[in-house]
Image (cartoon, rainbow, N blue to C red; front, side, top):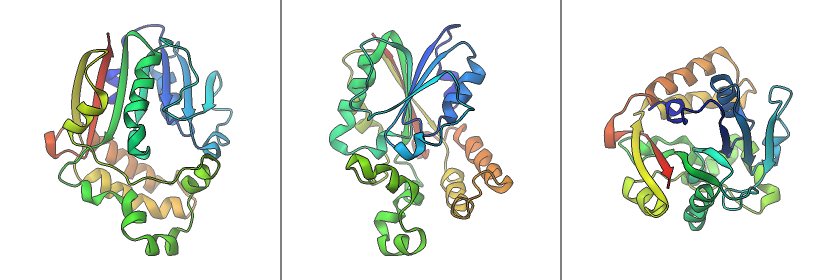
Length: 238
């Protein structure tokens, strides 16, 4: 699946990215939609402090997905990429309802999450839960933990969703169309595992890590159906 291809085909476009981190996806949106009005929300204050001169004319706010600081029907497109699985289960439906609320009529929600596919068990994000002692010994408290300190939240189990679970969370009311696209198999989680040493050593932009990222992106763009590691839900508001 190719997330960029799901953006609405409009010359002037307003996009909100939920869980934007340091704005990498928004910078990509600016490249492919130069006239777009861009905004991002992120719970992690530490990540927002890293937003720099590379992101001018992008509005960043510290907020949670279930309480978005925007009026009704403000955006043409809302993206929420690999974020829902980080929320407590009780907030999943509330967050999606908020996303629909701030979309304009005919606006598009692009939601990606890990899929309960064949290699879901390879998810490196769940090592902290499966082997907490080992994780603490090797990594201690990561940047994600530090970013959550001021919010009163903890890092959640990295949920891999079945399609029927997503259908329940998203619901049918308020949407004119809902479609599912799949992508990735085992190269995505393997690349994630192999990227850990680069992040630990403080070299996230190392050539080796960038190559791994490109490999994961290539894998993600190939559909393996219900065996896939990732799933994208594209919803159009009524």
